[in-house]
Image 1: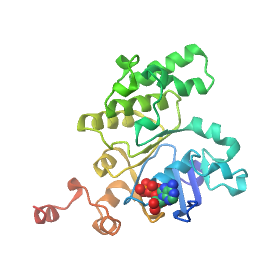
Image 2: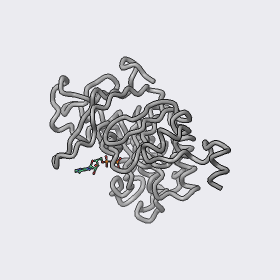
Image 3: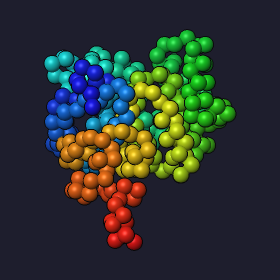
Image 4: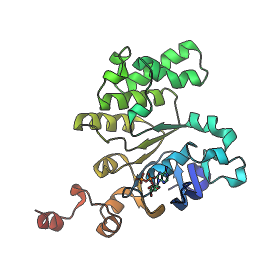
Amino acid sequence: MATPEQAAIELRQLSFRYPNGRLALDSIQCAIAGSERLAIVGPSGAGKSTLLMHLNGLLPAPSISADDDAQVFVQGQAVTRKRLHEVRRQVGFLFQDPDDQLFCPTVRDDVAFGPLNLGLDRAEVIARVESGLAAVGMADCSARNPSELSTGERKRVCLAGILACQPSILVLDEPTSNLDPRARRQLLQILKAFSGTLIVATHDLDFVLDLCSRVLVLESGKVQADGNTERILSDPLIMDRHGLEVPWRLRSPARRASEG
Ligand code: ADP
């Protein structure tokens, strides 16, 4: 685990209440190192998506203008209204539903959207689009309409657009939802090849085992456990208490036998 000085992301007593009064995050303290792959797990309604949305200022940045008010720090910088653009260059965000991210008539245009927004010149944008699509194995699809692709392919196009912006941090909300086994495997390989900080909220604990070295268990907006993936996911007390199940491959032989 990172000390605050080494952290790519630091949360300082992060709390957040929705306008309807619901306290979704409650005093979250956490530092994530540049080299870490962290999974955030917990039951539905735990606060996972709300937490992710704070990492690139989707929440609640409009109200935060002074460093002293900030509870989220990216690469040592407070996430404030005036730094939003810079923060979003560093933090790539993959939404659960690719249709929230794709809106252009061709795959190429969608992947180019981010690099164009960064103000890069034409040659650099073309190079970034090519390398982004190659990284996700979609180079042959650049002229296709995203709406004609499968969910897994659309997700890979979204990821290509994010990678084309060369973020140092990738944040993913339920990346394996609605993916078939092959698309899920492809996604795992792409994410393993990413060398920056990775933060993923998911119910897919086998995916977590294959990808992440650290797990944070969230429930009722609070951190309930934080540590080594195998240690936490194999602990039946932690898992049962927070509505989670020990993945099959981490269950003890006795437990497997009793469950048939
Ligand atoms: P998770 O991603 O773990 O399922 P969420 O972050 O979506 O959890 O939700 C955390 C809590 O905040 C839940 O109680 C949820 O009902 C509530 N919540 C989420 N979005 C909103 C919203 N837009 N307005 C009010 N409450 C919300």
